[in-house]
Length: 389
Figure (cartoon, rainbow, N blue to C red):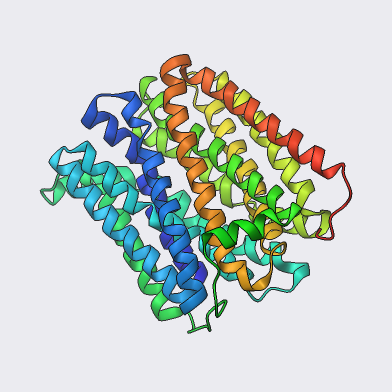
């Protein structure tokens, strides 16, 4: 049932991702403002991450995940109404609430790892990440049918994709409420934000994991958020944009079981380093792609997704096992908050970078940041080995 909710949540997130930046650009006429669409959703995911962790600690994962999906559905409805009314500021507000669906998608991986034995934690976590693949690949390709369906019903076409997201989020919340068992709270006395940071700061492996999660999120969301705009300038159709984004999202999730196996067998940090290498390569690939170069963009965005997956799976597993059990749920919520803030800042920086240097400059900047992350991981790995694999 958790996997089924991930499929539905993946549809909700991915459908909105494809049209968010395009809708803001069309309503505002500004590429710079279009760059705020994805950061708004990521900011929402950050805002709801810590509350979701606290609810999970006090009342269990079931209520936490259902509430996060429900808020995402409300945000998608507000975005649909705003798109129909032609208001880009209210569309951005809707996208902030919409980001709560991402909170649920990310938190589900920790729910899968709650009862996993140490030797299988990364693999169990990765299986739920993998379940998101189906919905995430379907989502971008439902954007165009959503517009047609809205038009056929006499609604504004721009509202259609967001209505698809709202329906998917609502079904995901219902699936979690009905299908998941009523688990006991993860921790009886969850720590608060400052305590969560102290728990991370006191563990060297946890700091490495959090750094990899934040940088990977910033690079991935920065490049991904501006690619539809770049392709739009190259006269690419919505179908072509949806295909490239589907391949990117498939890269994010489809290989996660293999990544989880590698993290359990070869070590968390080895997989983190591989992810940093892939992020660097993806930045160089997209830097050489014109807006109409579908093949090179598809390859670059797919590699970007795989690199992000390596960081997410290995970093999440390393973080969860590097902090005390009593603070684990709140630390996980805290890490998702920081990670999504990094993603939001990456998206804002991406919009500014494209305005100043063009899409090529954005790709080069992403490669430089990813290479710096690889240096951090390599420097830490060359030191005394950690007790955690």
